[in-house]
Length: 181
Image (tube, rainbow, N blue to C red; front, side, top):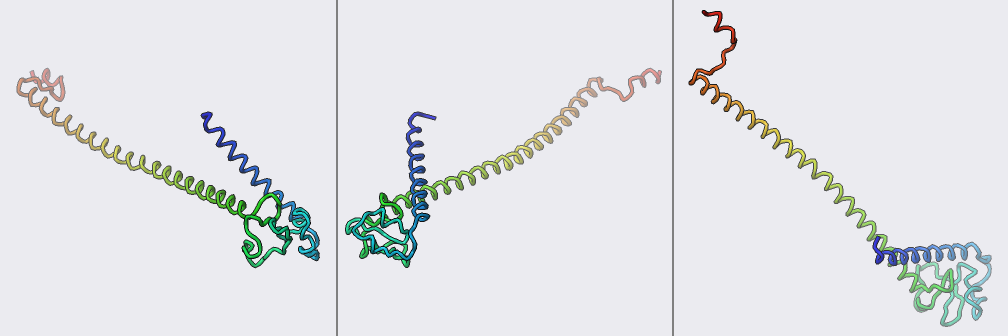
């Protein structure tokens, strides 16, 4: 592999590892949740970590408010908290960055699937082409063989005519000449 390709590979691995770390952090945050009886508003004006111990809470960084996550919607509305300052699961990732990252990863996965499908289709078409060319080659070989046999028969008949003309025609039985004497 060329030296120019190695940084891209390590960059991909870093992104993959960061995504896995984010997933694990979100998973650990979900596992370490407080009992559901604790209200999120109790953690307002405290730290983000204290708020996000409860998975049903959302931290708004600009207002330092701990809010109940609006479960009826996928993303919190901007009237509740802007996406750039909303945190859920971990404090170091806001929703805006999360959406961008998931979009890029999703696009990369879709692109990879499309490339794989295109590669498989092209490979299948390539494997079909030799079948057609093999059939064509077999037909051409058969036609050549038939033409060659016709040429041989034609040449044999010409040679036989020339032999007859000059009396060099081979007889069926070479000993028949001696018997007739």
